[in-house]
Image 1 (tube, rainbow, N blue to C red):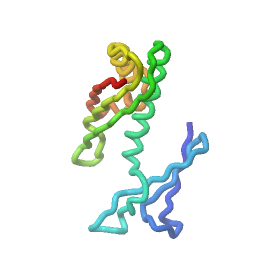
Image 2: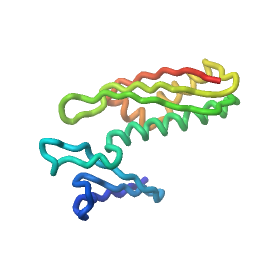
Image 3: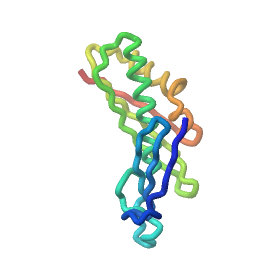
Image 4: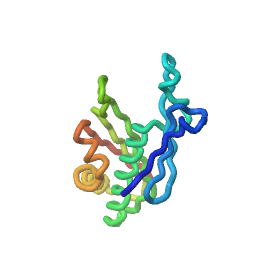
Length: 148
């Protein structure tokens, strides 16, 4: 797996802390820092997601992929899966994630709650590389609800 990240601030663009990432699969992601009112030259322009937000988004995509696949393989009639992620970070550097809650909203016909719970647990404990890595510094909790 590969990724190349380029700083755009040296190219005369609006953002002094903007970055463009090109993934090994050829996709482009924009990133930017938060504005710094005390030192504007050190901050971004809020033109794109923060890199740490992308870590959470990546974890959300990874675990959602697992949950949907496990439910489909278990012959559950899953129609939708949303994961709402809330995280807390350390107060001091490095400001790693310390707590992460993932709340899943799974939609489908006659979904079996124990199957949904099992799919989330399997993702969290065995398959989702992103959440397992983030779990090295953060206490990760999960919850879910099922909608028709």
